Image (cartoon, rainbow, N blue to C red; front, side):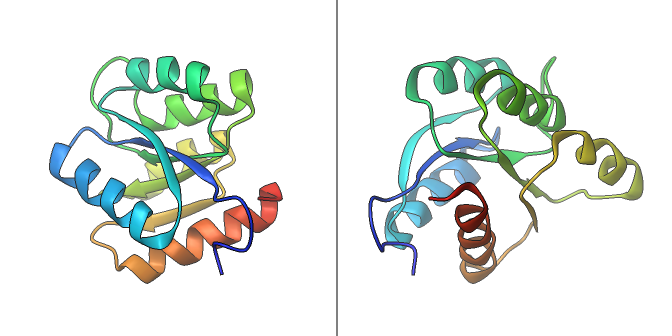
Length: 129
């Protein structure tokens, strides 16, 4: 399960405050540590610089100058932080752009907690968490 040793640390980048709160609560229930939530790409990059999480849950549709795909690319390039994308709008064009970030997973909104847990556990195995 997810709690075999030290819990994995996760940054949440989600501009919908209700979804961000739900994800934070869900991560705690699943045994993961949320280092913080960010409503924008700029905020997420600043938070990542300070907290150095092992993984980021990133809404592809983040508003602002840095969308979720650009954020995931920057997190990986600047800090070595991989991402799992969460999206309610995943079309072929977005899928093509998203590959630039080499995501460790994609969870489509709306999702079941088990879908997110499975994606995180697969990512955890990949990053050696």
